Amino acid sequence: MTTRDDESTPTDPAVAARVAEYDEDAREWFVERAAIREFDGGLPRPEAERLALEDTERWLARRSARSS
Image 1 (cartoon, one colour):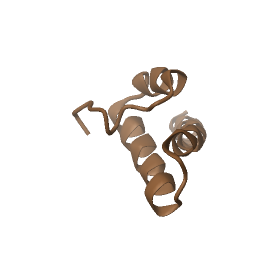
Image 2 (tube, one colour):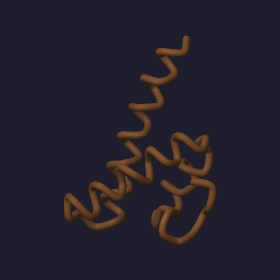
Image 3 (cartoon, helix red, strand yellow):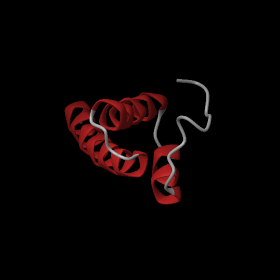
Image 4 (cartoon, one colour):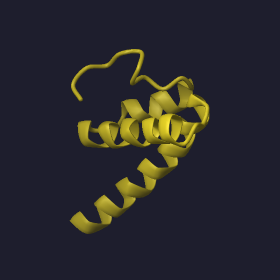
């Protein structure tokens, strides 16, 4: 994902600030998880994004541990 638009920008400024620090792969991972939780899971967007942030943080920790 190379574009930044309203659809992929998190609604919560704190979540958006954290996601802005991610590399492209992590941003894509976050956006996919948030979309799954929102559209397939029926969660409100802010809740989907909060949970996707938690998922992404865990994924980044595992990714970092594997590359160490």
